[in-house]
Image (cartoon, rainbow, N blue to C red; front, side, top):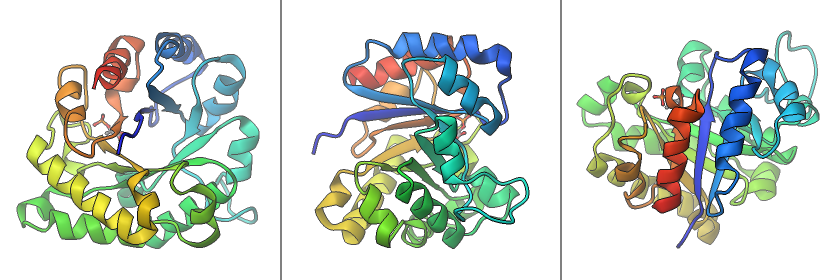
Length: 253
Ligand code: PEP
């Protein structure tokens, strides 16, 4: 099945108001892309400003709380993100699973709440180096996906059009190491099978992105792998100069 490629930048804890011009430069660069979807997930505090001032690219968040509202000091709800102009959010990034102790059921609740509120969701899964070296990567990531996938009203609201999965081996994030095409293919095919188990035919339409040190030099090879529908890009999404060649590679894939 042909799925449109999807390239999403994750700015993590980078970006000040002075960087709005760079965000606009990225948006201008993707302006003529007709066969690829592109979005930028920004620090929460930049979302409203970017959504108001930048034209031509969807703006997303990097996390969302699972509750609709309430006593959750410092947290941000899906309705707030939507109100600020975000149209999507990442959930379950390994830096949050590890750094903020997020469990699979938290990730699932976040995905369900975001989809119910009309936000697109990039749901991240991926194994540690220890797990890969023990030969347990496939089983671990499949179990993580099964336990994190949205069900119920959230799933009905957003699968397949608004849900994407990002397979991000933790050892490849920000390290310059990239999983081999064979390993990526094995994992993405396994995740595709799980999505079909969970959602039937609609599971064929959910896009599966690869993430982990994607850059201008390796993007084309990664996009050529079976069941790779795009990329979640960290460091190389911070400037137009580094990010736009990745978008170009997706256009030509
Ligand atoms: C990420 O932030 O999800 C990521 C994959 O980062 P990087 O591209 O820097 O490895």
